[in-house]
Length: 180
Image (tube, rainbow, N blue to C red; front, side, top):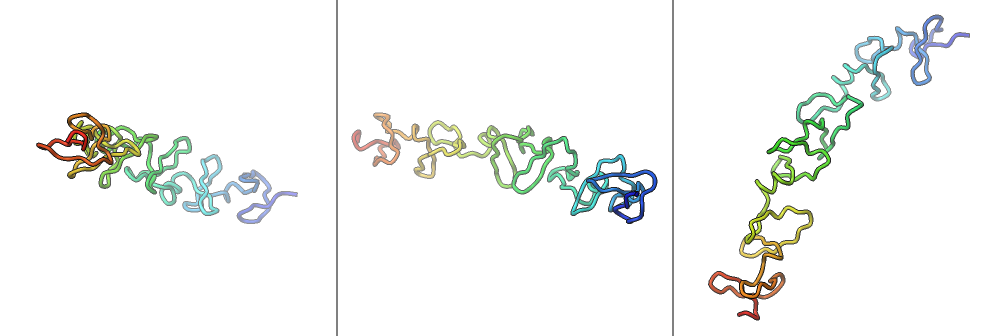
């Protein structure tokens, strides 16, 4: 006894197409959008319907947030960041244009930066050594609208750390209570 086609429910007497354990006439196994036969093509599912690659890409695939091309290649690991999807080659530092895939990302306004470019262009700098303060969880001391690494915020005379300590300003220098 022949199987019945899943689409038209008529008996299948000749060639059978089987997909997901369901049988179809070749002419009934078609793209939900363009109605072209799917036999021998890559098939993409969306909301229970079958689509060929072109229709899926055009109507249902996620699009890259940079180039707006569809993200349909099953052999590529796409990047998702901040609720958006990207081709790995499109997810780049705003300054040096190197990939950010798998790296720490630093935001400035609406742009994404690698650590080095962010440090150079936008990071807050230490008031003494002028190095950036971008390290994750870095603790810094703020004084007089400037930020300092704890090891840079020192008594000018004895080099003792002034972090959390009382100090005085003498001729524009920070001096601990012992050296005052």
